[in-house]
Length: 291
Ligand SMILES: NC(=O)c1ccc[n+]([C@@H]2O[C@H](COP(=O)([O-])OP(=O)(O)OC[C@H]3O[C@@H](n4cnc5c(N)ncnc54)[C@H](OP(=O)(O)O)[C@@H]3O)[C@@H](O)[C@H]2O)c1
Image (cartoon, rainbow, N blue to C red; front, side, top):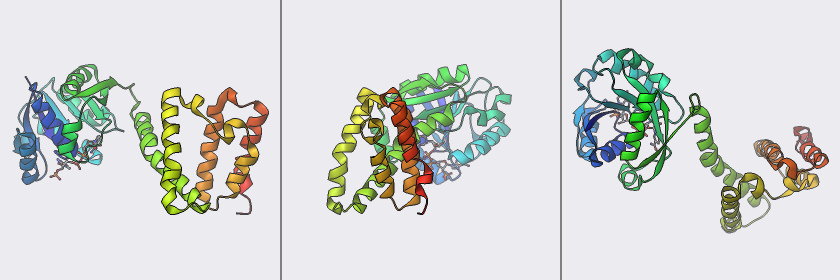
């Protein structure tokens, strides 16, 4: 049975530790935070582990998860390396979505294998997270022995691991941000425009929700290009111009223009060359003059 120690036992750390312990394939060894009370509470939640607050107290383990906030990972890696407690051949990994295992580099000099494991999942509430962590896609990156160990761990805790290309983390994480955060921003933009057009507040959600759900289903089922409808793919430049004239807010207009250009590119050969030129012309920021 492999042993795993957790440095940083917040929402993600203690959830993964509980799942690892519960799998029967890992033994949670040390649970380290900066305050003993939080380490003790985490051990209680995990149902295993020894609360620790001092790097020098860490026992040798097979795996170390640095589940501290992203901004603290590099310093913790440095401190863990300096403590000289990590045995050669151990796997040290973090769970950041955007950073790679390179930020753990000081531990390579100690003979550790380095990786990262990012579950595409929200750990807002650890109790619920532990319950619903089923078939969750987990992005892996790192050296070959680390990735092999993390693949096994991800499967044991209920995840579905997949490998990222080296250097791919920032683009991978940007994809998740666009899919999640920008979808929320688009919802707000659509609501604002509908409100400006006189749609009663209580009808904003009913008006947009059916259309948004259907469009998302189509984009995921048919692929984005085939799912595209509306004035841009039809080459209706005059409608695009009317939309922009209706927008008083410069930020909203700039976002509409930028997304319009992306939409024209996505339309590909569904848009004839003359129509594409007219649409791109209508989307030009120069159209904003006088506002
Ligand atoms: N939350 C999510 O949904 C989610 C999803 C995917 C990935 N992640 C990644 O998971 C990692 C952890 O995120 P989280 O949301 O679990 O954070 P969190 O809930 O804020 O927990 C951070 C933990 O680290 C401890 N800590 C902070 N600084 C420390 C330090 N210098 N040394 C030792 N322990 C320290 C904190 O305890 P004390 O304050 O008591 O020290 C706490 O236990 C991050 O890399 C994040 O990007 C999170």
